[in-house]
Image 1: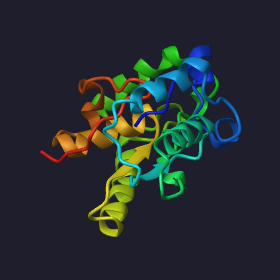
Image 2: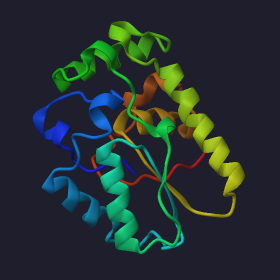
Image 3: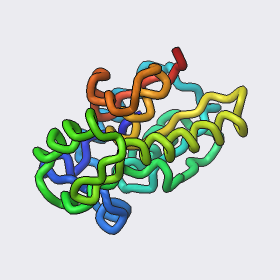
Image 4: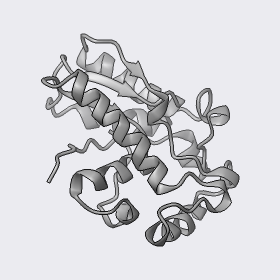
Length: 182
């Protein structure tokens, strides 16, 4: 699940560094409503295990899901689910994302502007999945994280190169998408 609309989203800012994202830029009112709407279909059981980035926008999303579903297990916060780091673009306009995504398509190890590479993101996200799959084989898990990390992670399940993460359907705020291996 991608977090609901955040205050960074409404301000048009890139917030990817823990100094800015852990204690600031939580959900907007619309973001809270999106999360509520996203879990209203009843498809998620109370027995679900919730794993979340520790950025405020993801933490608040996970808390809403946890409370609304009456989850049995507490939310587990995992720093490996944090936003992709966007280096020098931090606190700059989010209109710069396409510039990075264009580079991603051709250079999976690029670190232009100090951005975390696609290969680094896929490695970190895959490690999380492998660990949770081993520990919680017969349980349903919900990862609450950020657009780029989830888009990139989905490429592994779709059987396409991580460099093609923007060719997948865009993951909307508060959208839940099942990760199934093809």
